Image (cartoon, rainbow, N blue to C red; front, side, top):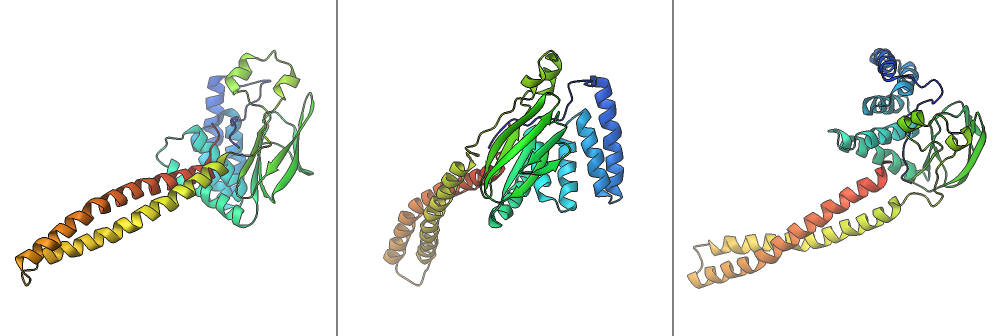
Length: 290
């Protein structure tokens, strides 16, 4: 499911821009130092503190990498997706997309899907009885319906997520962006705690099916095109064979030209459809929140 991702921010006592930049820089630098020493668990804690001050594509990527190093593919996938959402045009976006696709593909082969829960202001988050002290939360689980509860100062907010194999089920209990929250500090807690979900699951499966069909069609078109191209090349070679008569060489030349036109059309058209299908398939696995 494609939903808006919310960078961690607290309305009460929300830091000013200068304070946020300073806090982010401090924790990010300390996290980098820990990561350089191979102390990934400590680096994760510090990167997450940095995210409380300011969420950036770089901090999300660093968190994804650190979680990947400690073997937590669920959180690695979540933060790589966050990084893609924050900077979809980044130079390394395709690399991150491939990483996400790899993790989700493996989860799908294991018969699992990804649950993502975003609730920056929540004091506690529970997913089907499993408690987490803070958000975001990410875990791979078997397909099925899961109850998700977030405890806010104003009370509890509960919803259900439908998880499908190899796909992402995501809930954001605080869909408003931090600048708007800062401007709307007069809003009641109940409004701020209200979340957004969609139990229908992500639409990525439709894109995936269409992409696979496109890939099959592309291969089906390109294959005979390649065969015709090879045959055309053989005829062209015979047309240059001086051991046969001029009439025979002309006949081979005519055959080569007749085969070359459909061969090029099939190979080019099939190639374009195949590339489009591959791109769609990658997107269906990633489907980063916007």
